View 1 (cartoon, rainbow, N blue to C red):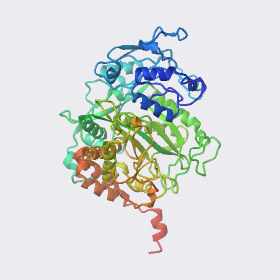
View 2 (view 1 turned 135 degrees about the horizontal axis):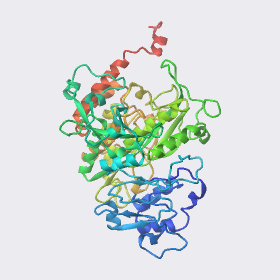
View 3 (view 1 turned 180 degrees about the horizontal axis):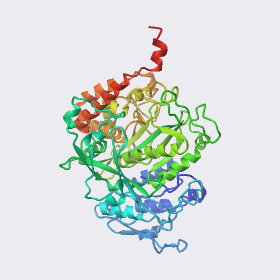
View 4 (view 1 turned 90 degrees about the horizontal axis):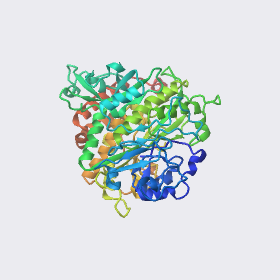
Length: 600
């Protein structure tokens, strides 16, 4: 998990990697410094292979072996008298490499971190003076540190709120669609013993806000409309950068009155799957790539969406895949987006222009699935807000514009042994392991049954068409973008699998839980994959459901998948989606009026 302080290769940052200082440090410490600005993606992969993905904090310009008790300090490298210590906790991952002791890290840029807990992540908050296009607020201090909050207590959360002078709290709960539900509280009302509640059906309704009137839904959801008890997850606290008054947002988990996680809440489902991995001594690692469209404001649902007008005063009328100038058409918007993401400590990486007119993609750094789901949840909300402030909409619909490609959420995934820290997809000799192939086999077997989770709306299935940059089957291949399951070219430590089936419209918690569940079942049941597809997978047959109705039938019949995800969740989800599908079937489309009115 890299946390660059700078996402652009500008100024002297790009030359800090020159010479032997970096390689010497990497070999000495057996890990990578956290901040690696201006470094090419292929170089990152190479270094991760060398360092096994283990990270420390600090600036690459300031590391020297003498800072780690090795060698003589170079007098040309001034030491910061206020440099911070990185405490390596006993029993933690760093302990296994470096021993339980304190290492002093020169922090001229304010990038030192105190008390790095086991498994914690720390991101630099140093200002990037070489990137004038990246605006920073006047209150940004070069001693501000964005420290990982995985182990935050409520007391530490309250201190964070006080330090940021927060006056209002948005208490958020992601529902089945990924919509932020919850309550807004004054800061003084946000206490650990408050016991905030919401009706349990709030997280178990469809995108139209409708509920089933009867049926299995009410075997799980009590008809008495009982409450859930909400508990804040302190690790999720973020500032709301667009708010007028200092406002924080905190994601909450949902519990019943006995203190048990509500099984059908999306965050609970992902926690459940991650716990299954932990029980096996595994730690799943994911990295989503989320596509989306920018469109002109549209207040009439009967009017087709159109690309927005950029700085040139014109809309896109042709395909502009990977065009830098096409992205720069919306530079004022993306400056705000990156500024917001920085203030919210979101690990966003590369921004590119995708194939469609007005279609973009944002990549996230790899991390624990729950943290990544939270970041995608926050990012969607952030992007929509920023777009509206620039007189346009951002949409994650799977297929928003006719004759343009759909939007996906490609998820790169791998599994690390918690005992060794090694990627279990690779053997010691660097070859692909049995677990790698079994994971693919699990995806192949269970993706069709999980399609209602990966493609959750009637619109989702318009994206999955032959030859339109979206898969139609469950073939797998190396560096092959025509398949549904892709293995990118990477070194042994970075070997991973990319699920290309998931739509951008999927709930990130549900989608990550489902794809990890498929892979988990593959490893546990030792499911062998089909032979690798080495050609064009679009020439093959459809192997995926063609409609939401078909997908729901497959989901209900997948008992193994329900065992991993939770039968209560599958029941609630499928019943809600059935209501949505029935609601859609009441709508008469323009196509039907055009072609059937006088011809049948």
